[in-house]
Length: 139
Image (cartoon, rainbow, N blue to C red; front, side, top):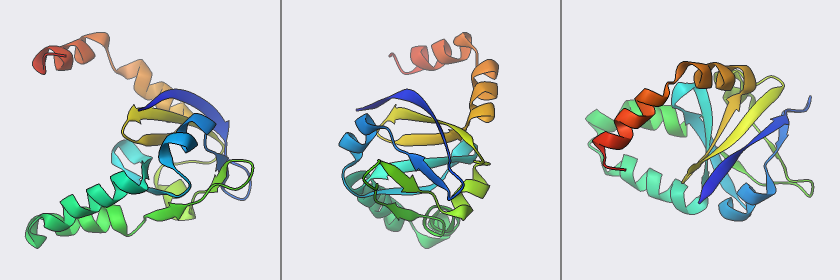
């Protein structure tokens, strides 16, 4: 399970260190794409394939916008010896990733956030909102 939060920097070449614990879970090759909340989602090859199958199984009238959003910006990532991955410019632009980022585990995927946006999100979400969701789904 992917969990935890790690603050890192994007270097001038657009590379960021993927935390070792996440690399262990994600495997040698993993995939990045646009995510909700103007974030980058990173998935293992297995989860990427599963997502692709789900999207492709939808009627094209329902899936075309989602397919375009997810697949047009997707990239295969392979960490170098230092654990860095190159995030394509299109993903960095989409998620406003310039320098300081927060890399978080969310169970089945990793999310990469601009640090300032992550801090703002955490300031705005309330404990009562989280408890409401937990109660709704009996968690």
